[in-house]
Each structure stands twice: as C-alpha cells, then as structure tokens.
Amino acid sequence: MTSPDGPREWDAGSYHGLATPHQSWGAQILGRLPLRGDETVLDLGCGTGRATEQLLERLGPEGRAIGIDGSVQMVAEATRRLGADPRASFARQDLLALAVAPPADAAISSATFHWIKDHQLLFTRIRAALKPGAPFVAQCGGRGNVSNVVRAAGAVAVREPYAPFLGDWPGPWNFAAPEETVERLEAAGFAVERVWLEDSPQRPAPLRDFLRTVSLGSHLERLPEELRDGFVDEVAEAMGPDPVHDYVRLNIVAAAR
Image 1: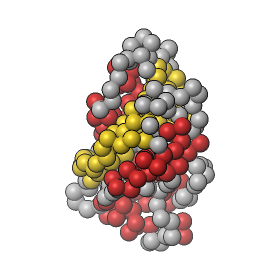
Image 2: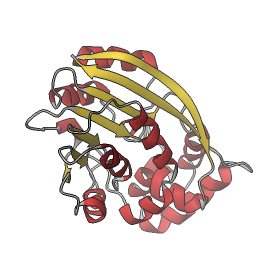
Image 3: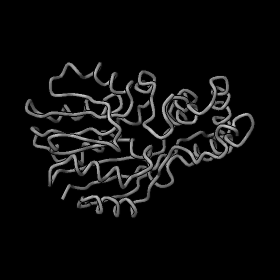
Image 4: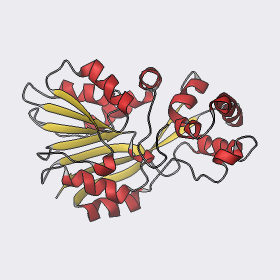
C-alpha cells in the first residue's frame, strides 16, 4: 500500500486504456509550448507516457524528453512503451523532491498537480529544475473540478461500512484557483503569462472501471479489499442518471525567471 503522504501507486495498464481524455489535454498543453526541437523537456507526472509520446513528435534528433512520475508502475509502463527511443528516459521521483541536473530547457505537466497538496513547494522544486527563461506549460484539475464525483464520493464515504476508513478524511485532491496559483508561481520564481480555468466535461466509459482506476484510487487504497467494489458501485449510483465527470482544467503558461 502506498503511504498516504507520498505519491500514489497506480494500475498503469488499466490507466493507459481508460484515460483517453488525457490525450486531448496533452495535445492542448503541447500546443502552447514553444520549441525549436533540440531542447531537453521534463514531463512531470508523465504517467504511461501519453504526453511524452506527443512531445517526442515535436522534438528532433537532438531533443530529449525526461518523464518523471511518482508511481513505479507508471514509470515501468512508460519505459516499456517508449524506452526504445534514445531521446526518451523515465525516472521515479516524488515531484515534491524533484531534482534534475543539469537544469532542463522546458517543462510540461498534464493531469497531475491536483494530486499534490503543497503547490508552493511543488512550483519551487520545478523552478529549481529549469534554466532561466525556460517555458513551463501545465494543466491539472482546478477549482470546481469533478464536483459531481467529489459530491458523490463524500456522500458515500460517511456511510457504513466506509466511514471508519474515509469519514474524516478530507480527500486526495487539491483543486486550486487561478489567483492563488499565480501568487505561488511568482513566489517560486516564474514569470506568469496566463493562468485560467476551462470546462472539459467527460463521460468516461466504462464508468466503474474509470472510477476504480482513476478517480477513486486514493479512496480505495484506504479501504479493505472486500469493501472496494461496493464503494465504487455506491459512488457510481450517487452520481445520478447522467454520471458526468465535470472536469475543470487549471491551465498554466509561465516561464522561469
């Protein structure tokens, strides 16, 4: 079991097949990243390497993509998929202890930062891993993200038999607002071009598999094995007849000062 204070461990094989919304989000991020093609670029929270793969398409033979993730399984799956490309490498690191030498030319991140509680420390670590002037483009869940899932999970968590494990837990998410994100980025040493929220509702299917692997994985880690399927079923039912994942994306475009 993953430590509740450390990066979450993921079922990388299931995740790669289910997390289709993340591919379009990765394309949006890369569309905002200026590149010549010979840079070394960090993919922070690389997962199974979806965004890394798109990044490699934009890099030339002198470019390099370094994928970093806190999950052993994610790093292993990304390496299996993309490790044959000499321009790609992957490493397991907690982003709150990020250490890269020499500093990189740019950094991207997709659908990761909302799992991390301390954004000020996170941005400080990222800034230290980048050269002055390096672009930093990211997207994660922002204020109001997946409110339907949050509401349903919270309602089920206080019921028996789940309450002893989840009832007083605040949940795994950190859905920040643009204003506080700008302040944190500037304090960490970034020049901020723009930070904004954008709605991106999704109806991932099959719903229960998506909830189990992506949305509720941190909840399930806290439950005994015999309670996990029941929790997922009750959350899916509590989401109602139109079980939308009402994603709200927090977009970041900045550069290291």
